[in-house]
Length: 634
Image (cartoon, rainbow, N blue to C red; front, side, top):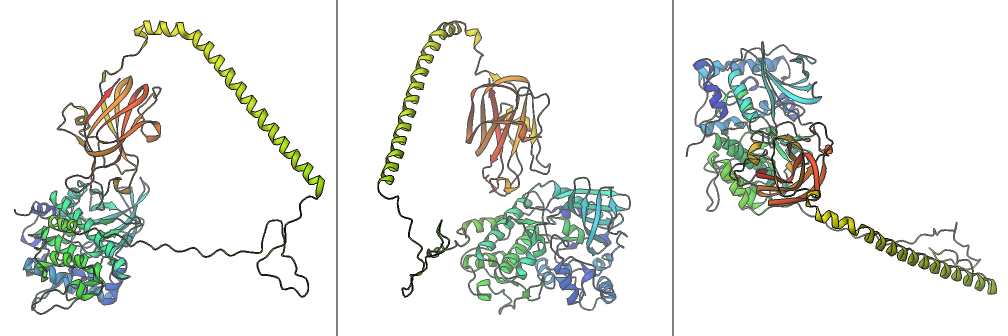
């Protein structure tokens, strides 16, 4: 089956211009303007490539032999003028271009290089506001006609990242198309696109900013990752990219700077489709390109080396074996996990690597995901139990300020304390002991008598009360109209989403499918990295409006997969529709694919909250809640 076209390709085919505006392929390299920066400039760029310092890296552009590259010439002139103003790790991609060119089997033509002449970047400065909302704080990348900034969303009071281009930039159309397509994915494993705006002379794309995240470039600078960390890395990346490719999206720029590890240990990918569109990178085999990039990242995580001959991203390259094949990770560094080493070679097989054994190469993220699932799960090592230090007796004892002084000529034992004071002598001591004992016996007897008297008095009051109420109970039994009717279906007028810990991406669209009487239709949540909503929030729920205050006693729910759910209700006195979790009271909870939740006694309410607390794993190895049917009875 042919691979689906990426968003970058589709978006660019509808843009303006002719042959001079043709975007580069994944093999033609990236930011040509920084192709000749000095090593000092490269190290400076890489050092700022984290989430707080800029976007991801782009492969170094290399002209063909005998052809003068005007973009590279411009980069050289800028390099002589001073250190590059590029916090991207583009300038460090020494080996990235060579292996990407081998993937595609083609290089950039002279017309392509001519088209790469950059428009001047917009004259922006710190403090400039976009749309009277986004205040630019720090320029972290200025490259090839566009710039990237750390900014503040003054409306929501949060940090964001912004890519800014002039409105006449040749890549405006593909960048906007890629940003809008990536924003629709809604997968929490990717850094989310928040806005894409055309504003007069400027076009800008706003995305999330993760201040607590660390780029993989920084992690690898400290050394190779442990086996369990490398396993989690390849598992998260392969699953995330498989989900993106199922929606027709590709990354094409998956480098160490594009992978972030949050403070909770989760891995997130930034720049999906947008980074490639900013640099005009396309690919005829996007799934193969992203799979090989994941293999390269796993190789680097295991060895702290880049799996190509040239150095890149602050990592040393690896010499090729005879025949041009890549040296396996377990031959580069001792102690590398054998299964992960072979997995990296299977993902890199089209880049000169050879898959050992009888396992076939992995050419798509979906195949790589299946290969990872076949490996035994690698767990972090358990810390050994430390025996507590032996107890050391001290000279301190309550009531003793200092140890007794030994008589002259007698050596005191270390750690001893003075003897306890003597007991009361003779007759006085005996009288005191017997007096205390007598008081205790008298207190126990008095207490027992009071308890027995209270119990007997309570029984007499209960008998008289039951005799007095006998007639009333008979009258209530004889009048069935006094009992409220139960078990009758209650209609649901409408539903609304409640997502207090989210960012507004959860939607109640199609919520009516959860109570339309059709078991084949359902309302569903977004995808999450684990059953507890990726540890991002406590849960997601639907607020059901019954139209008026009704009697409710039973809530019947059906899910796709075992789901944990809470039944909450608002008080009958609620005048307006509640908008927070604190406005509801918990009634019952349960778990399973078919759950029936009961009230202790019928309650009166207008608003019922179905609150999901734990999601099931779907057939796509993701976590998502799906409600197929909701029924309420009086």
